[in-house]
Image (tube, rainbow, N blue to C red; front, side):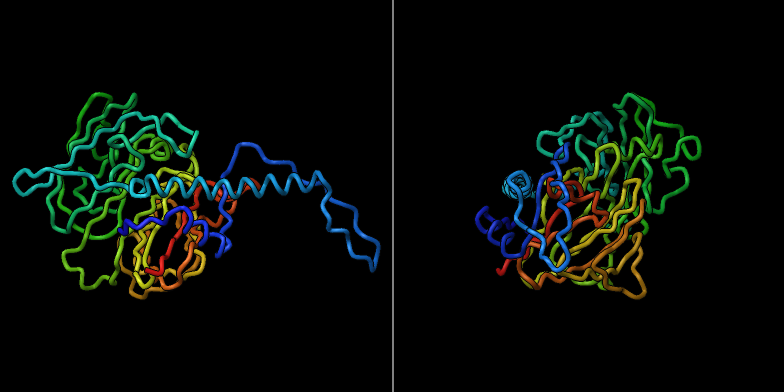
Amino acid sequence: MSDQLLNRRKFLTLAGATGLGLGIAACATPPVPAVTQAAPPNQEPDATPTPDQAQVVAEMDAMHEQGVTDFVKNLEKNNEIFWSPQMPFTMDGDTKVFNITMKPVSWEIQPGKTVDTYSYNGIIPGPEIRVTEGDQLRFVVKNELPESSSIHWHGVHVPNKMDGVPYVTQPPIKPGETFTYEFPAKNPGSHMYHSHHNAADQVTRGLLGAFVIEPKDKSTEPAYDSDYTMVLNDYNVGLTINGKSFPATGAIVAKKGEKVRVRFMNEGLQIHPMHLHGYYMTVFSKDGFDLPQPYRADVLTIAPGERYDVIVQADEPGVWAFHCHILTHAESPHGMFGMVTALIVNET
């Protein structure tokens, strides 16, 4: 992916030019101005705010502006960290060996908000597993949690005994135990890995990650210049993209003319219709399977468990909001929060 980041001045200039109203959410809701009485017929209502109303407006606007400032600071510090690192592996003959430790972690969702939760290898989402079709894979999974768990390879075609469902295909991995999964990477595409034991709690608590199998033959895939994965989540760690809530989310950064691939993965309990301002997304793959007929959308509804792959042709410079369009997942009177990021397109 691109490692270009806008400096603070340039970002704010673009944000102002595009009218991007990004802000930070807080726990309380500011007071709402009282509704004034209707004006008599044929008389224009007085739009002049009272001093109290003007103060509310000023406070609300200031919180929106502060959100932009905080978002920019985050981009300058750790935009690359936001996009999950790939899981390292070692080779045992022709087998790629991955080590996964399930363990508790104190995770910062946004500045000043930290939760005690679960993780794969200490981060949320877990490191992205990225392999090539035909690879032989081994996953050595150690449980350091206070409860049993397992790993299900969602969308990945595996032998039945490797499917990761306790009491169906394997015993649960109890605290302190280790379990080894081994299988070939059969079906290319965008997949996931997550807990399948007390799953509504454990998955949304952080036991989730992306599992990408690259095809041996990429000639049938659309061309793209950069590749981003958005893991959507809700409930235990809140409304998050890649384990973070705005203004701690990162941004997609592209040069004008680049083609950006985005892989959406919904690991939450709710649908999340993702909307990119200013662009159509060309949807070409669903659940790891290329569609016979790609289509365009500017809102793409992603249900729990679903994955979609899209291409965005970055041809209009500026800062473009990118968010879940269930507005209570993205905006309050305090400004933007939760499932909000941005596409930043530079002229060069």
